[in-house]
Length: 151
Ligand code: SF4
Ligand code: SF4
Image (tube, rainbow, N blue to C red; front, side, top):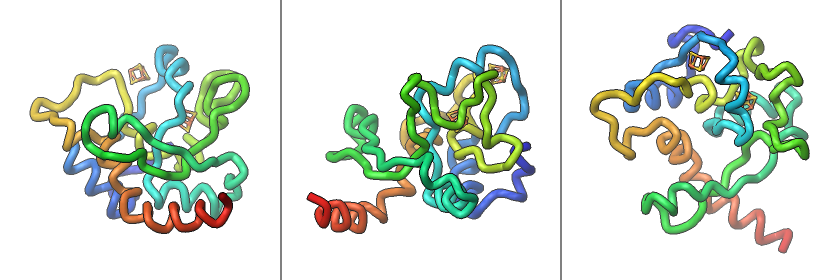
């Protein structure tokens, strides 16, 4: 299960409050087809996945939607779930569910995504996907320095 809001980390609660979007507990066929592009986690979500032994299912990712929306000048480097060779997120099970759901480890974007309409006062700056991506900005220097070592 996703847990109650009080179980969430400080950054997850801040993102929920800023975006006005909170987790939903529903489950139906439509969402089973939503896991092609892996959902985004905060650095804390990804740390929890690594600590739980899922590090080999993660990959360094360049998040480019921020550039397309004029929010960033460069891709945001982050670590996120891999996309499998079959085109689905590595954590999507063959019956269409999320392997991480019952473990409480689903990345925050996956917990907040639903078919509900956007909140009434939605702006791109309050969009939860953008707020999650922003959590990676303080780590960009560290990423780029470490990646340079392998060039
Ligand atoms: S982590 Fe789970 S919810 Fe997120 S895309 Fe993968 S299978 Fe879907
Ligand atoms: S968010 Fe919508 S589509 Fe997804 S499981 Fe819930 S009701 Fe179904």
